[in-house]
Amino acid sequence: MLELRPSCECCDRDLAPDSPDALICSFECTWCTACAAGFPDRACPNCGGELVRRPVRPARSLVGSPASTTRVLADGPPCR
View 1 (cartoon, helix red, strand yellow):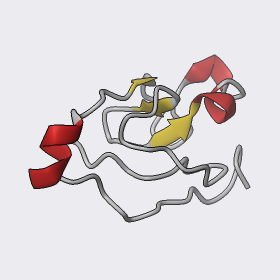
View 2 (spheres, helix red, strand yellow; view 1 turned 90 degrees about the vertical axis):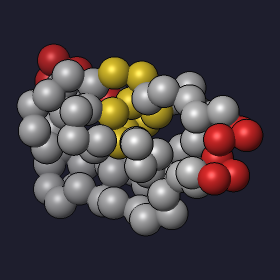
View 3 (cartoon, helix red, strand yellow; view 1 turned 60 degrees about the horizontal axis):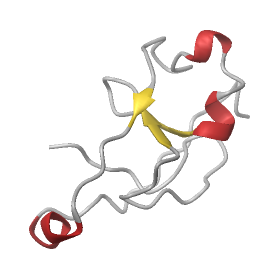
View 4 (spheres, one colour; view 1 turned 30 degrees about the vertical axis):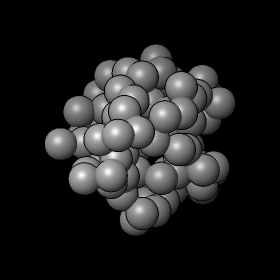
């Protein structure tokens, strides 16, 4: 099950579980579309993997399987 991290790892922007602006890689690194637009080849700066739109978990499913509340921030370029 996806963690559905609560924020962009670059700018720390809040990304709700139903946000259409959340992108993830296969390791679930989480980025907002604005930050990802500046990544070379629009690839994850942590692992180089493809970034895709994060799936939305239906609200009824969030009751039993809530989104993560743990914020993750990347160290170093291109974010810091």
